[in-house]
Length: 163
Image 1 (cartoon, one colour):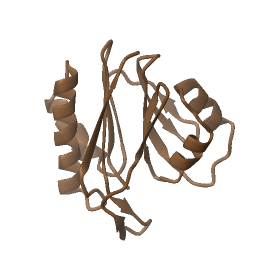
Image 2: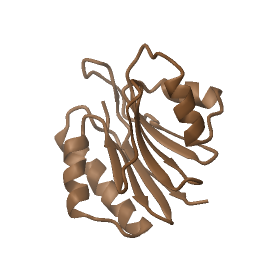
Image 3: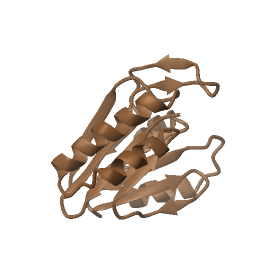
Image 4: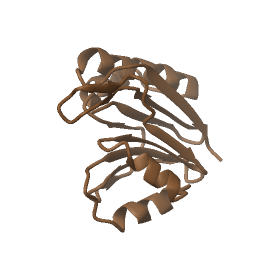
């Protein structure tokens, strides 16, 4: 239960953002200072649904989207999760689910329970630069935190340049 956003600026890179609240399945707050992202090699991602997956990806040293995709699709997962990812070498964003669903959107990926609120903000704040994307991401995460019970804590914003 989260909000995770990845905004792609073709040829420049991407901005990834998320809230920092971790909750149980029934919505009890575990932490308001939780890391939901991973950056290794050319791969940057945010997870919604099963945060322990970040430790698995880190231990496997998954450093690119092709390797991530191969690993996710090679297993039958006990827990469901959704990823918003950016590969700086491919200069592409991805939406990937543990069930094997994959999308390659052009502009942005939004995951988690706060998605509807964030999509509204991104719709009225188009981004042509990394700075505009950072501002849009800040407002989009803030909207999710304000209007979705399961989102909260602070806002984490990451910038990744194209390689």
